[in-house]
Length: 157
Image 1 (cartoon, rainbow, N blue to C red):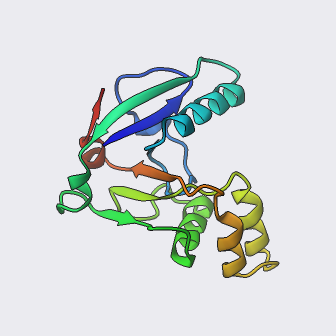
Image 2: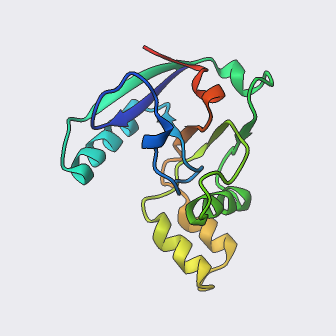
């Protein structure tokens, strides 16, 4: 399958030290199977950094790696309590590595995720309300690659 990564500057090697912590599935390299979603992310990155040009990198990923036991994989089929708790743990942890998965696949949390997480942590909403609040209008998947083993499964096109 083809996966896409949106960025504001091109690069040839994936460097985990440039990855930001406290993202949905932790500190790692994120891709999507929707080109427009990657382009939107690249545009947002340019605006946030106030530098660069929107770039969409394309990678080939053999989906068999999700099931053949090569990597430790977690797949969320949709928005659920386990997914919300996983995001909460990764977004709020002081540790760089929260889980032991090489690859995580699941829905992208809505842009208002920080607001929703704060409501939950302050006990204004229940976990069920958090899940509903984090549901993205179109359930687009994100692909997290968090280890060198996982990155080795990607081939730049």
